[in-house]
Image 1 (tube, protein in one colour):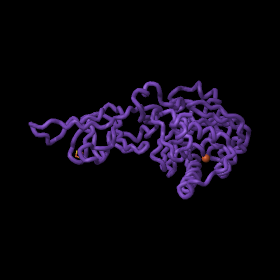
Image 2: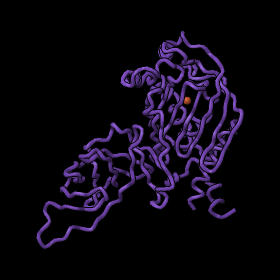
Image 3: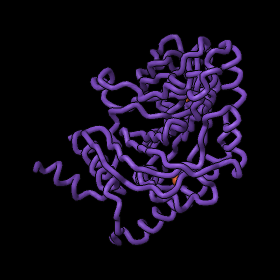
Image 4: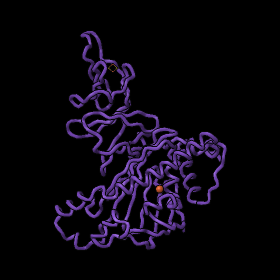
Length: 352
Ligand code: FES
Ligand SMILES: [Fe+2]
């Protein structure tokens, strides 16, 4: 074992950094306009904005003149103008204008960092890593986002906890106990785990409350009396740094991560209900299918928001307990979490 891997193995998983050589999700598409916003990805403040063509850019959220936030400024002529003295920066982070520059003065050569961003499937994906790795990796993506056979619902997770607590919560299906009143799933049982350098796939069996095989069965999302427990495979995957799950053929959920710092994590939870079982629907005109998809958008949001509140409470309590007693050890029975921690560590170890 090398000294780097020894150091990582001994490092507490609750203090791990992130592997920056991946695409992270920093915002929803609709959050980014020509008015800059500030987001934080692993201690780095980033200003996001659109130019007049609608293209999204990401610059370090720091004016090199006096270190104030560039996101307080505005987009003028496709450049980001600082609110304080009006210095302007282009999309590569170069200072391109100072309003009071004297004839005998040169523009200061104070370039700030710009980040590669892609807008895909309703979200802004950002690559904070090594530019040489940029083309090796691509955003995970959510193909169901634009597919007419899937209805999407989105919830936002903001929790005061290290990202490892959120991932462990999502990979440990035995916590269905917490969500009993929301009827998400029941009686999970871990069958098998596959893992490699980039992912952990945990295969459970479970009971699902929902069966989407008739058009009216969407109403099960709103009326608990219509739900009937039945067995389904439940697969959950940690595809570093994000998470995906599939419950039978009817449901798919993604959790797209934006770790903010060691004790704060933002994430987007996207739930898809499949309409694949309705043969007749697929023969209808595209405009009608689009109408169905759009009108049912966020149909499961109430359920998702309820799950998030319950999960966040537990996750934040785990973080607090850790901060108060970092040496206290947990008693873990779910071997999927051992694999999850191994993957988190190896992602950092491989950076060395
Ligand atoms: S602080 Fe930004 S222009 Fe002066
Ligand atoms: Fe949960």
